[in-house]
Length: 452
Image 1: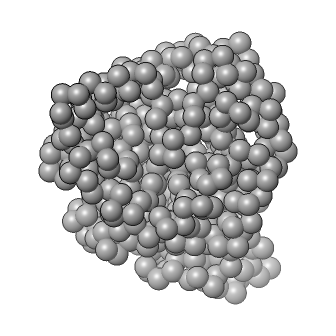
Image 2 (image 1 turned 180 degrees about the vertical axis):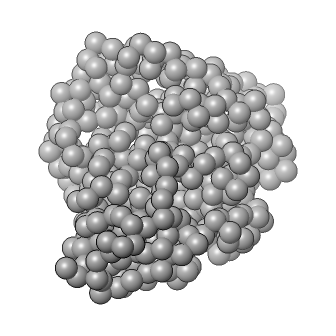
C-alpha cells in the first residue's frame, strides 16, 4: 500500500494524551495512525521529529468580509492568514454585504469561497427580523448553523425583538442546527453610550464602561430562557466575562444544549490597561475586560463550561480603527493568524497543555458545529487535516507581517514560543515553514454532519 502523505517521527497529540508515531493521509482522508513499525510507503514524507502533530486547528469565528467588504479582507487573504496560523478550517460569519440571509446571498458567498479559499470553510446564516421564514431555506443550502446579533454590531444588522427571537429559536430547532448569539443587551449599552456622550467622554475607557458584564449575562440568560421550550442548540460566541461564564454554567447544570467560546484577547489582555496604552486599536465588542474576568474565562475552559477558543477575526481598514473619539472607531481586529502561536506560548508558560489545545481548538469547535469526527480528530476516515508545530520555535508577532489585509493587532511586538510549521488541509500542504502555497488547491465547503 502506498499513500499520498506520511507524517513520521512527530508526537501525535490527542485530547487525552500523546505518543510518538506517524499519520498517513490518502485521497484527502486519514488512512492510518500508529507506531513507526507499521508505517506505509508514501509519495510524500514529512519528517516531524521533535515536533507535535495536532488534528487540524479550527477557528470557528472569522469574518472574511466577502462579499461586499473586500477592502477589509477576502477569502484569499483571510485563508492565507488562517494557513499561516496553522488553521485548517474556518467558520465564516454572515454580516457581509448582502448579509447571508437567504439562498441567493448564501450562494454568492459560497461561490466566492470555493474560488478563493485555501482552507476548508463552513458558513453561518444570519437571522434578522425579516428572514425568519428563510431559516429552513438556509438549512437546505448547507449552512453549518445560524448567527443572531442581540447587541450592536459592525454592519448594524437589526436584532430580532424578544418575540421574534422566540419564533426564530422555534424554527431553528426544527432544522436540528445550532444558533450562535452575540450576547449583549442593546438597551443597556445604548443607554450608557448616550450617557457618556452627553458627559463629553470620548476616551477609550468609556467604551469598556459602556458595555458592562451584566449586559452580557442578561443577554445569555434571555437567550437560554427562549430556547427552553424547543430544545434549540445554543452557542454563545466571544464570552468575555465572569458573568457570562456563570450564566453558561447555570444553563449546563440544567442539562440545556448550551455551549460557549472565548478568544485569546479576553484571556491574555487587561482591557483597562490595554485601552489606556493603545486606545481605539483595542476596541472590541464585547470589550476586553479586567484580569478578574480573564481568570474566570481560564477557569471556564478548564472546568468544561467553555467549549472552545476562537478569534472573532475582524479585519478593518486602518482609518476605521484609529480615531481620537472612541465612538467613531470601529470594533475588532484580525486574529486567525496569531491565535495558535499565542496559545502555544501559554502551553510553554504552563497555562495550557498540548491536549487542551486539541480540546479547545480542534475537537471542541468540531463537536459544537457538528463537524466531528470528520474534523477535529485523527480517526481513520476523518479529513486529512493536520497542524504540525514546533514548541521550541521562538519569534515576535509583527503586525506588518500578517497575511490579512488588515495589518493591525494589539499583540504587535509580543514574543511567542511555539509556532505552526506545516498546515495540511485534506492532505494538501498549504503552509510549510512560513511559506504559503497559493497553488495547493482550494478548500472544501463543509456542511453539518447530522443537522439540516
